[in-house]
Length: 193
Image (cartoon, rainbow, N blue to C red; front, side, top):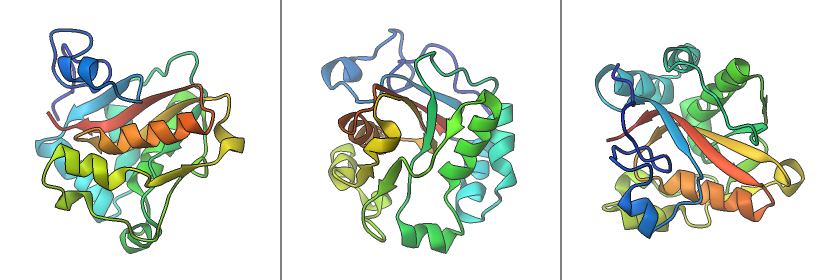
């Protein structure tokens, strides 16, 4: 698996010679910082898809362990997985982001709470049907709800399986910040370059 390392934008983790890429300067994301373990290609892509669609849950610990030490910022104290709609979760036999978040919690010692953020609706629109980044942003706008009692005054580390357009991570972060979170960073197992 190819590590997602080298010079990258700290906000979106795409390759960049500058610490913050032009896109993130012109259209700031709600996520303060993103880090990803691997480039979403080859064996990393196969592992993420097996975790997501075949419920090979043991891969979550392996992906977290192989990605190296995850070091959340000092102001982060809660790990929150990206939720998926309930029917999708039932059909898949679980949520891959929850498995990854548990493994990140074990590695970092930070608390983990899947109740802090939930997906609105039973199924939700499919992001895979989106034709553009703008479509993906439109599809996830308003798709999440946060529990203020669990997130207010806390620094959050969002965890997901893969980051592509940043639409889901950014909308989740906006929702958490609106509910009183102080800062939202993110970690994904893989990053689509």
